Image (cartoon, rainbow, N blue to C red):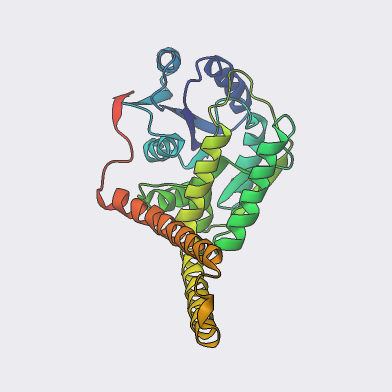
Length: 308
């Protein structure tokens, strides 16, 4: 009998946990696997940890990791994958937006030996704001044009992987992590199951538009050098325009010596334009340097306060 590890990152999910566990247990009852749970408390401010402790007392197969503070979902995913010991490992959200009913199908596809991972992707975003859906769609279009690593549109973190693929993911100890990109970058044959969007079973999402935007920028910077290439081209174009402007001013001065004061407004505009472009390029480069700075400090991705 194969061992299945279920990794569940949690942040302020005290309402969802009591609903999630029995829902998954019901599905696992008919699956020929020995299951273990790894709940990861990402520094929750509510009673999420207490709910995990209750589940651990009820079932020895339920384990939990509690961080010393909030390190982010990416750190929680990494910690859970690192702790998991199963032959297959499934990553799933606790809010039941990832349908547990897909687990048997995912397991069958991996058991067939044809695939190394089975993921899930939403084919619509019913229930979400149109603005957030628009930004999400544009993100996938932009990053797939910029990056050589394909990020599947609508793909969730919800996926079941073989031990070989999990080990490959764990072999990438990057401080700044973008799991969707890492899952694609390591390769391996992946099958995606499509489904319609499901609303949260309880509580409110912590993913605001601002956080999603920062996450998107991080993903682009982690898996594409296009912004750096763009800054180079901006610099080249600005340089050419500046030289052209200098030639124009010199020629005009020679042809019409009395026109020196003419065009001061356009000159100020050009200076402001070039200054703005320079600041933009410096900002892009600074973002990459910041990621290098965080990586070379070699700080741990997370710190565990309690583990059972």
